[in-house]
Length: 333
Image (tube, rainbow, N blue to C red; front, side):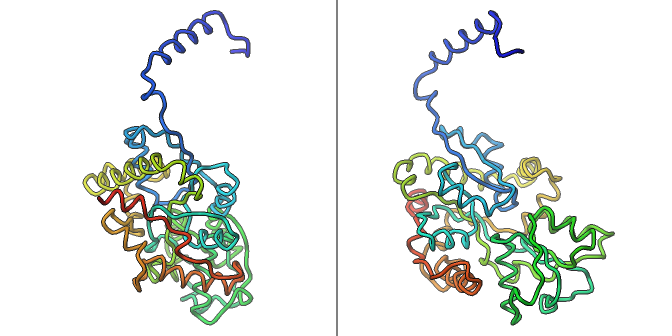
């Protein structure tokens, strides 16, 4: 149809407009929110909530905005092009070091094998990374996991040859033989390990060895939180409902997750074993100050030390300034 609408089209438009006005005001005014995300198994509850129209249940119109590069999300959130974002906690600390007022309102997941360093079978462990070409996405969870692996083995970035690329490109780089080592996350890890007949590549280090090191969180800016408490509460209610659905209907949930991630449901079920989504009654453990590795205060200190070592931040941010537990507390009542 051309830009000049026909008389019939204009008439249909008038009729639709009439019915839109006839809808009760409270139903027509759904809260709108945009949340930045990437394709990641840890975000499964959001995919399930979307598939079940869970956000609409609480009068919310939520758009999950997919980013090809999660390193671009903090800037998008600070700039106001999205309302909220699913970030890793190291990104939150990086933002805090710049004075950006990001607040964690929800611990979404921690990687428990979903992020990994994959290498040819000739390389047996992370201790053998010296002198190797390593493909990874800078300023991302992959970069952070690599830094942890190098530091744990007395190495630094100067001991490797970095090859920067998006996470999805790592598999192709390894298959072509241009690099022997890659750092990425699911579903890319499984694709690499399965390629070449399944006996060419293997995982030499994953977050199973460092639970809590890569933790995904839902973040909003402080001024947005002050103005949109009702909307944030509604989104979190839908999220908790989705967690409950996943526990009671794992196979159906896997269908929804697989569709969102464009992978078979069986793969979705398998990958869910590589992350952990805290239940509502467990979430305060992340916010509370304790020696538990899952506490933001404990893993945040460890994360901050690595970021300082890599010169990605100039000073350690105040952990408490990055947290807002009011919504979790309210939902637990």
